[in-house]
Length: 373
Ligand SMILES: Nc1nc2c(ncn2[C@@H]2O[C@H](COP(=O)(O)OP(=O)(O)OP(=O)(O)O)[C@@H](O)[C@H]2O)c(=O)[nH]1
Ligand SMILES: [Mg+2]
Image 1 (cartoon, rainbow, N blue to C red):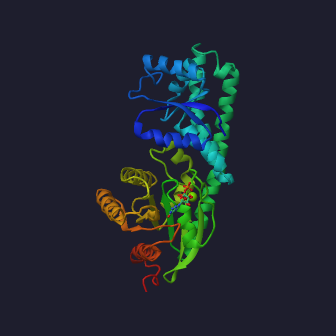
Image 2 (tube, rainbow, N blue to C red):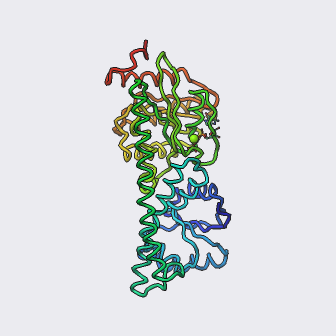
Image 3 (cartoon, helix red, strand yellow):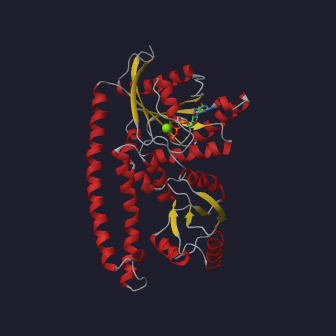
């Protein structure tokens, strides 16, 4: 867990809150925030900005600079050389947070794989520059050590990939076994902290950990219960964030497949947040569903935390805005249901919507004949 003061660099002011929340989650404190509109190669920052950042790093004595972006290896190399501080980008920070919450072997392996894959091009860049005599070596080590490390990283990546493939196959077998029993799977997906686990607990009567910190859930949980006369398995999943780097989606493919291969998705949104943010998070959630190949699945959009919205008109207007937005997407939306997972408000409507989503399955797959009965 980091405990340093960090200089935060963002390209868009809209990202500052999320970047700060992620930094705090990893145990860092933001010493200063800078907005950088234009990215200049090869050092990410233009000459003027670079010398401004150098001054800030010196004056505030920050040990790390966090760039809320996906940096290219040449950017990291150049920034490290110029600023003489550690450089963290979005991928590394998210992995640091995941690491704090990872309980299972699978989650740990996924994080290590993502980190190594992220490091590989950086090491390659250092090796190339060391050969060209542009740099003395990787973080002070000689060229021989760096190439030995490079080989080690590649071997480790191959090994972890094999181990993860075995775990992925095991998940696949478990899923198909449950399918043989005709139990539909409803994945609870959505932004981190939107209340997915609270909803999962309320529907299953379990007590899985919930919390205001980001990424409380790292390992998907599945539990089958009977609703409207049939058994349905609910799957709690790992949360989304805005503009999630593709590398992370790749590394977490096995757990995200729980959404891709589900029979219906409950997409949760935290409507206690400002309208603009709710719609932005809806947009990112849809992008992620698309990138994992889960857009054809029937979706129940769950507008959660309505107990925190004192004005009922706002809930009505939110439903209108969300449905207006959804019309322009390819999502197969069954219903939009406002609920409070914590206070269990409007659960009858929610269960009814889940049953209707399941009945969509039923008509297309001739399953769950008891659901609407
Ligand atoms: N007031 C209120 N708080 C809620 C509600 N649902 C969830 N919360 C709170 O929101 C926080 C996040 O809830 P979680 O269920 O852990 O959210 P999550 O989506 O599973 O989060 P990650 O696992 O981090 O992705 C917790 O503090 C919950 O108590 C709700 O309906 N009303
Ligand atoms: Mg959770």
